[in-house]
Structure formats: structure tokens, C-alpha cells
Image (cartoon, rainbow, N blue to C red):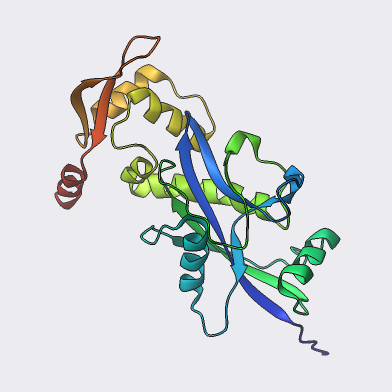
Length: 238
């Protein structure tokens, strides 16, 4: 049996979800110049530095893009298909960005949920960082569209095990309508609002506030908050 060893490199890619204007969004970077086409958008990522731990590489990438140090990043899958970096345009970009002799590129994907209202402080080599609605994601390079789709499946699994994670994407004060739209976006389906109200009423950690929306054209909705202490106490009693 003939065995051929090849130049294999390992990278990290970060899938960062947020929620803005009632839409599920994802953090993308532009790998070309500012006036490049949409196809130049990609997931934020990087090859791993020499002697750098893979988790540290993921945190470095996110910090360079956002300026956020304390953010929860969870490794969820490794993508290692031999043809994931075979597109000539992708290979051309890799050669320009890193200049190594790459025969195969394996990436470790990380998932994070973030509040969009956090100010982004981009100090990375990517000159433009954008929050892109999931419903309008273009064709991305490599297998990044597949990574995004599989990360959505991962989020749904997280929610089944820990419903509190959805509140990481909402502002501190939110309406039931916002929470409802976030669930619809994550599960990509219509959810009956009456049944949803019943579901929320059964969540003791979602607390109604004595405050309503102001300066809105429609009927002002009541604000709610997520009470982490109530949630932790409830979980500890199970």
C-alpha cells in the first residue's frame, strides 16, 4: 500500500450569531477590498499559529474582530473533507493570505452567541466586519455555508438541553414578540404565538417588568427580563 503524506494545515472558523431588527444574524468578514462583491464574504477564521492551542486561536480570531475578550466559544465540529479547499479562487486567496504550500485544509469550527449591541472593535487583517441576516447569506467560500447550516442544528440541540442560551442574543429588556421571532428564526418555521405565550408563561425565569415600549406606532408591549438566578435555582432543584 502506497501512502502519500501531504501538507495539511489546521485552521479555526468562528460562527457568531446575534439577533437584530427581529432577524437572526451572523458575523461575517470581507476577505477582499472594501468594494469587492458579496461572494468575498466569509466566516471569520485563521490558520493556527505555531505552538498555539486551538481554543486560543479561536478566541484570538474573535478578539481581533470584535475587541471582545470574554465571550463564550464552544467547539462543535471538525470539517476535514479533502475537497473543502479545492476551489481555484479559494486556493488563490489562501496562497495570497498565508503563502504556505497547502494541500489540504482542516478547520475546527466554533460557535458563539452574542448581543449585537456590543460595539465591534476590529483590529484584524479583515478591513470590514458585517452582521449579515441569516435569510440573506450569499454563497460563501470553502464549505462555510455548510458550517453555518450545521451550526444552526447545533444551536437547536443546545436549546433543548439549556433553554437559557437564547437570552444571550437578546437585549437585557425584551418583548415576547422579540423572543418569539428569535425562536422562529432559529428553528426556521412559524410558531403559533398563542401557544408560544403559554410556553413563556411556564418559564419562571422570564420575568415581566413594570415597563412598556415607548414611542412606538403600535400598541406598546411589556418588557421582560431573563433572571439567571431563578433559572439556576430551578435547574438545581431538578
